[in-house]
Length: 235
Image (cartoon, rainbow, N blue to C red; front, side, top):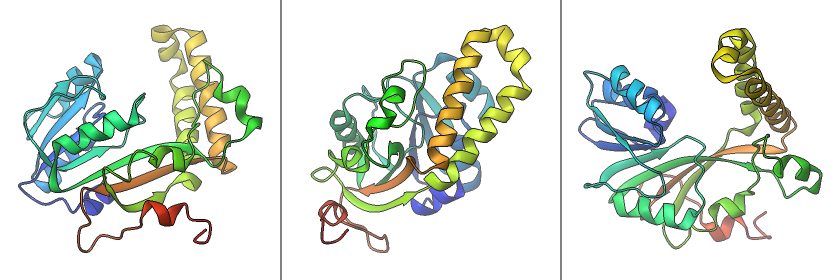
């Protein structure tokens, strides 16, 4: 969380939009530690009810809406999306982000993807049970060049298998309670999906990219152009 705040150069008095705010952990952290006002957006009613209780007393408010149909009344200094959002129209989503980001603001988002298009993984990507990264980096960025400047790209893929291993461990430790709520079949599907993802990240077949964007290049922020990223001579 501190890394996100550092990259965005968050300081007291700023306004921050968190898309995919989940249970409010990041929103509460930023509001409490950086004295900013935060708006969190989620499409889950159960999450927003918990988040409002969790963030009670801090400068955080939440909105229940779909991520690709944002309707807000202000612009923000920073926008964050660190959840794996199921957005179908990436260009529409990014255009919406530009609408709510101040001209000198920064947008940080994370996206999973495949190292390359690999037919050996087709049985996974076509599965309705197993959710694994399918997009390559060039596909994930194809809507960006005429909307934003790419300031920084960082890859956390080599560490992300540990995240899935931790989720598997928690799933197993709490399996009895979870099965009573969600059913044994659902928990089995979750575990199978986590195992596939953990192995994919461990073998570097999957990656997890954190991407920092601006409307126009900001001084003191590293930048690289889209053409540089995918120029054969550069690679």
